[in-house]
Length: 361
Image 1: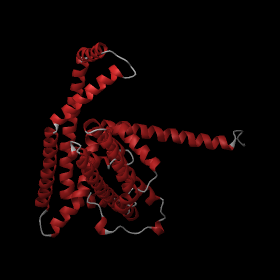
Image 2 (image 1 turned 30 degrees about the horizontal axis):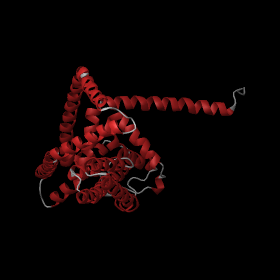
Image 3 (image 1 turned 180 degrees about the vertical axis):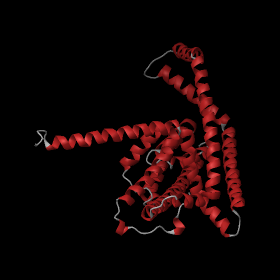
Image 4 (image 1 turned 90 degrees about the vertical axis):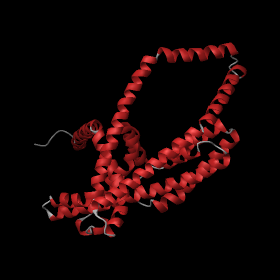
C-alpha cells in the first residue's frame, strides 16, 4: 500500500531525526570533554610539545644517544628556556612599573579634567563624589571579590595539575611515542584498516607539525617587526607586548588583531596619540605582510580551510575550554579535515604512508 505521506516529507523527517541524534551525541561529547578537560587538554598539549620536540630528539638519537638521556636533555633545555623567558618578562615588567604608574596617574588626571571641563560639565566636587562611590562599591562587594579570588585559586590549582600532567604525557611521548604508536596500530587485525589508520596518523602528524612550526615562525616575525616599532616609538613593556603578539599568532584571524590593539592602547596611554596612530599603521602593515606573504609560505596548506570554519572552531573552543580551547581549536580541526579527506578518497587512489612521516604516538 502506497504511503499517503509525501516523499519530500519522508526524506525531511528521516534527515531531521538523524540530525537530532547527531546533535545529541555532539552535545553529550562536549559535556564529557568539558568535565574531563583537566585530563584531555594536557594530553592534547603534550602532543603539541612532542610534535615540536620530536625532531630534536630524533637527531640526538641518530648520534647514538639513548632514549632516556635524549628525553632528559630535551626537557632540561625546554625548562631552561621557559624559565629564562618568564624571568625576563618579569624583570621587564618590574622595571616599567614606575613608568606605568605615572602614565596611569596622568591618564586619571586627564579623565578628571575632561569630566569637569568637557561636554558633561561635571563639577570637581561631583567627580570626587563619583570616585568615592566607586571605592565604596568595591568595599561593599568585598565578599564577592573574595569569592572570586577563591574561584581563581581553584582555577590556578587546576592549571597547575594540568601542567604537571602535560609534562608527564610529553615525557613519555618524546621517550616512547613511536613504540606506543606501533603497539596501538598492531592491535588492528585487518591490514586495510591498519594501513588507513597509519596513513591518517602520518598525514595528521605532518599537518600538525607544519601548522605549529609555521605559526611559530609567523608569530616570531610579527613579534620582531612590531617589537622594533614599539622600541623606536619609546613604548614601555616592549618584550611583554612582543610576546603577546607572538602568542596571538596561534589564534588565527583574531589573535593578531587583539594583540595589536593592546599594543596600540598601551602606546596611547604612555607615549601619546601620534605615536599610537603610527603604531597602529605598523601593526596593520605587519598583518598585511603576514596574510599575503608569511602565512602562504610558512604554513602553506597545513590549515587549508575556509575562514568561516576557523571562526566557528575558535568560538566552540572558547566556549568549551576558554583560552586553551581557542588555542587548540584550529589545529584539531585541521587534523580532523585530514581524516575526512582520507575517508573521502577512493582506496585505489590511496598511497601507503611514508615511514619517516609516521607519528611518534
